[in-house]
Length: 191
Image (cartoon, rainbow, N blue to C red; front, side, top):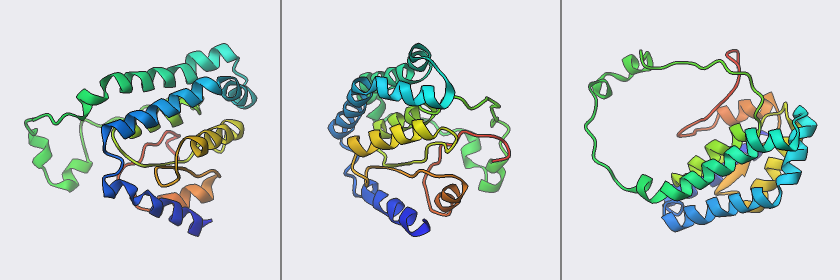
């Protein structure tokens, strides 16, 4: 319900305390996520099979294995990614906000949805590596994978660090009524 979602989002203020920024904490969180995926790979593959009919091999090659690769990549490079790097601002950074919203450099990818674990957990791993908190909303169209993701997140993270909201359009609407600094979304043009 709307009140529960608001409370979940309010707990995410942990980020503003700076508690999620120390590198060692980010590394521990990524390692915990990687360990969970490795230890529960069969359960995750089964959930994906129930939703999409993918074999264990295909689930690993297209979902869990790719997430493990992303987590490993982040762990290898997190220290260099976290270093401050000077840069020269581009001219379009100084344009008025209204003009920047109409960007000639933006694009939309039209890809079919069929990677519920990968498209949910890959961005989460990157958010954790960057020192962010997150609210994850798995797809309602893959209920078994969503339950597996929910279980994984509950076992790996405190709710003020990473929370999960399940459900459909009503929950999506409630979430979108809340303030987020960044939203990663995959779905159709209509949505």
